Image (cartoon, rainbow, N blue to C red; front, side, top):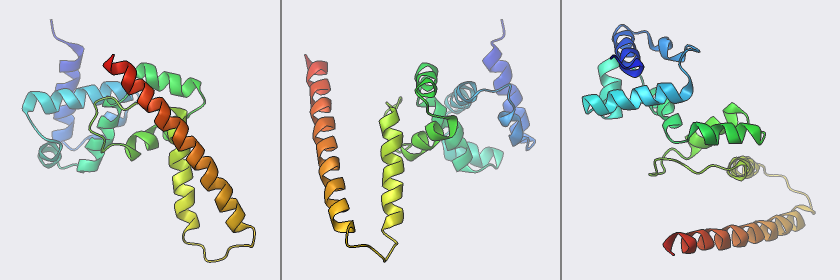
Length: 165
């Protein structure tokens, strides 16, 4: 019996060879199915992402983006959506953390919020005008961040301790 993924993989390979990169953007391919097919293609051919990009003359970054959804489960994706994150926020969080070596990246809403906060802080660094109140606001922010860091580090230590016992 022919597997649906094998048929789709052959169709994708054929389309990619002919330059139909947009086939993979059609609604019939959800993010997870596309990632699984691309991963299967890479594994079955023994290719790196760079080799696949060269073979089909598509940007390496496009393939990396397609594979982002190989790093989160559908269940976790749906959970994040139900907590109020939208697709683009999940995508940006995955993309921000694509260098992490783990297969599945643990993502929580707080991760997205921290990434947004970091981007906001980076934007502030380019401003040259501050008010007299700026210093006290920075002190308050620093205290809150230190408190958050202490809580997160303590929780992570507890999780690691529980995993080893």
